[in-house]
Length: 213
Length: 213
DNA sequence: TAGATTGTTAATCGATTAACAATC
DNA sequence: TAGATTGTTAATCGATTAACAATC
Image 1 (cartoon, helix red, strand yellow):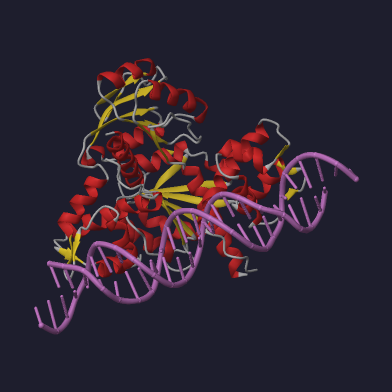
Image 2 (cartoon, each protein chain N blue to C red; image 1 turned 30 degrees about the horizontal axis):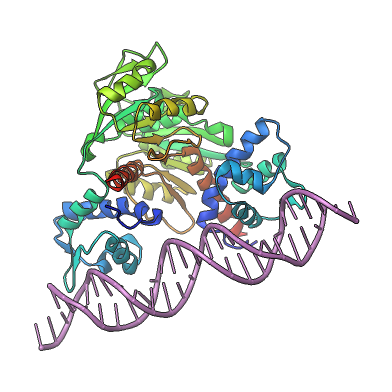
């Protein structure tokens, strides 16, 4: 079922479309044209139509797009209609914060386990889930059909733990460790390099200040 | 001092170069060619040379690049040689985690304040910094020459708080709220939309599974 | 039907890669 | 000097935008 390959640029924009559509839906808006959406999102109407057409004709000439339908479809494209089982590796500040802060279940992500090496933390409960020792991780993945591992451990251990995860059959890693992971073909990795993001902000501040001169 | 405008694509790659150079430096490597770096980073040597040349000729024909020097220069381009004062708005799970988890001072970011509306949290200390009431925010920005605000509050309040921040003279917002901020010209915004990132991962899982069929 | 707006093709723009002269 | 590797120009590739025929 080889669909034409979709560029990263398009995929990167889908969640934003999804967010705007969701807000329109909540406001009770029934239909929207690419022109109107263009105005709201500050992207060209042409790009919106082009992007959506990668996945099929969701609109109707002379009418525009049905908000509810388009919202559903983008959600489906993003795989949000499916259930994903998720574990967090590393129950430190960030791991705990994500467990508590992200509304995982809202989008079909089920938080089923959290692991750490620190004996002082093991056994504690986070969001009702008991912190387990790292040794149980591999068995847990198999037994609970875990799809996604959220990696919030120091970079020094991230590579070896990622190896264990992929050996254990994980499908995807949401990587917060500040290192590039090298995973086997078929394992998906999405990096969240927070310090990179902060550096870009720092760059933009500096560039603006030097422009003013 | 109008330098030629650098594309987002290039800027986005700078922190990654910086990270690899830092690791080479720590390993005591003295010089590196674009070819070698290309092999390590899985990008073309041509792109590396092209990217670096936007900022000046850091290399030397027949030799390559001096690791220490290039590391310094990229750091300087990213503004990491300058001190940035930073406050966190929202002392919830994520705000607290960032305060504790990010090694801000390491890159010249000085964490000077954290604010919340919740009376139960105000007065508590996080990383040695007392949580202040939101009302004090604007005065604090002026008095302490704050450059960057880290926004970790719910999206419902993010827009109005961002307005207060920019009115207060903030230079940049590191935005974790799940909403697009509309700020005056000259204020820099870097978004970290975690749920968008998780959705992209979900998309990649689904695409791979359907490819296998 | 006439008007509106999509889906899609063509034109443009920008980013990446290739090639090679310059030079250490 | 000869060899290596940059800096930079030219070629290619891909993504964005414009235009318009199709169609609701």
